[in-house]
Amino acid sequence: MKVLLLAHTPEPEKVIATAAKLCYSSSDISSLKDGLTEEKTAEFVNMLAAIGHESVMEHVSFTFGIEGISRACSHQLVRHRIASYSQKSQRYVNENGFDFITPPAIEALPEAKAEFDRQMAALTESYNKIADLLTESHKQQFIAEGMDEKTAASKARKMANEDARFLLPNACETKIVVTMNVRSLFNFFQHRCCNRAQWEIRAVADEMLRLCCEVAPNVFGRSGPSCVMTGRCPEGKMTCGKMKEVEVEIQGAEKWVS
Ligand SMILES: Cc1cc2nc3c(=O)[nH]c(=O)nc-3n(C[C@H](O)[C@H](O)[C@H](O)COP(=O)(O)OP(=O)(O)OC[C@H]3O[C@@H](n4cnc5c(N)ncnc54)[C@H](O)[C@@H]3O)c2cc1C
Image (cartoon, rainbow, N blue to C red; front, top):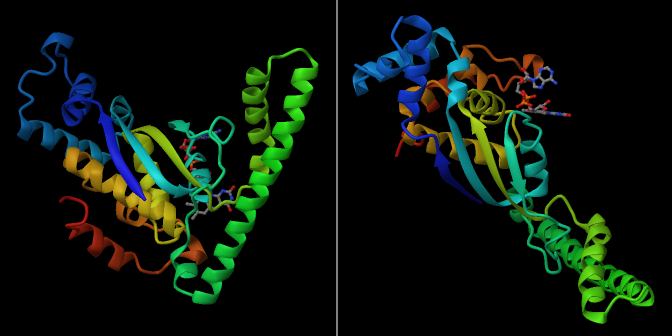
């Protein structure tokens, strides 16, 4: 799995402090940034986080490139609606010989791993077979309709991919670019850095949070799973019961800021 921070709003903490200052002072727009030293900005941002004034956080966005994750993981990611996504297409990109993600628990169990690999190989073979059959069938149809052979072959392959992909598993590797504003990231981290989140999206979320902390430590210093961010666990009976341990792990976390 690879998670890269591709871009972010310049001077993120200053943008947030400026927007907030507008709410609380009579300054003109042109003088809003005056006096916002690094120290003052940090103080302001910490105060906003403490009182939960989160709408000002929407002015700052982070864009990540993520690859080497499964479609099972990306499906969970795109459930977060307050975001923008661009994902590798299984229509335009041929998936013959597709890469796949093997869960660590399967990797660790030789018998399970052998079965998993057998099924991936079988799916690859079926995908290729069905794609070839469909390509030939569509191609003949296009040629019969008067299309030249080269155009017919290329159009037929894309159409074939569209249906052959129904065979592809949740394990299939994907790449995705995601942009979220800070408020949405807070919500994302609350859900997905949680012990109750699935291991793969949790690893993605942990790495995204680490990258955010490097750029804007005052904004993201209190960010993390709900128990860390709000002081309470919303999982009810399904709580991991490790609130204290999670808090200690995150607060003392060299893993967030390298
Ligand atoms: C441990 C775990 C288990 C899960 N299990 C399941 C499951 O079994 N089945 C399943 O379907 N999903 C499941 N989910 C997904 C979950 O229900 C959410 O869809 C997902 O986490 C996205 O969260 P969100 O809606 O808060 O994010 P976003 O879509 O980014 O929304 C952010 C916030 O905006 C507000 N908002 C957005 N859209 C609306 C709207 N239409 N109306 C009102 N308010 C809105 C809400 O306050 C929301 O919290 C699970 C998630 C987790 C973390």
